[in-house]
Image (cartoon, rainbow, N blue to C red; front, top):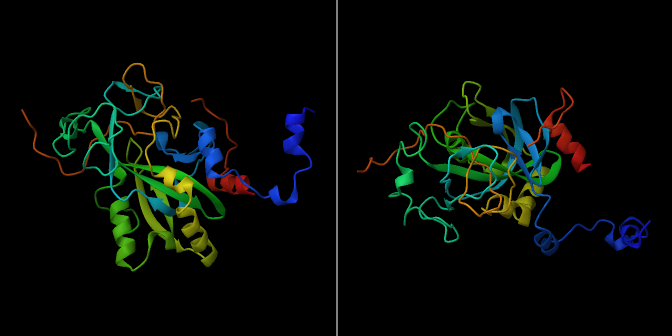
Length: 291
């Protein structure tokens, strides 16, 4: 055994046995172990370091929301739809009002007046610039933080008390004098939608231990990274990307396939597949990983 390998496998000092890589080490390593839940193809998929490692046969997933973007974000891809492309978005906004200062191909000075924000600027009646909201979530019994990107048709609109879009769901929780991290949230696929669309509802109160863990997880660097935009975070899993401009090799966050928007419109102006054992739920797999 080489000296380098034996250093990490043998004679580990007691005070280091429970130590984890700190924020600096993760930053220098490029955060290669980032975890997220993809909803590509109306399937919940576990993606780690850009590689799909598991998928679930279940049509629903339970989790605790520990952090989220305070505003609905936007992102725009200039090129043709390409499910295999891993380029960064050309323009994006974290607050949904103005393009981010780091966006390489800003489309307008503000999002409201942007030509990519007009109905019909995308495929069909959709907008070319997509709405989304990023969540940082933990699973009951699993302390790790996962990113879940909620697409536009899962954010806006109105449903019944058991099947609500995300914004309506959060308002419902608040109207009952509860915080979003005090309930176990269940996300379920709308089986009548051809493209990934989620409904949300609360299925249980969290335990005291789960609440304390959720508060702590929401303040971690992992949670902050999960709700931020980075051109080389969250590598593509082969899911619905648009082509980036030439000579760019950075990886992008997940974006959904073009769909019609249900949000108010401004007036128009002149991977490889991984085989999974049947009947194995994604949450069970996550619990096994945590153990």
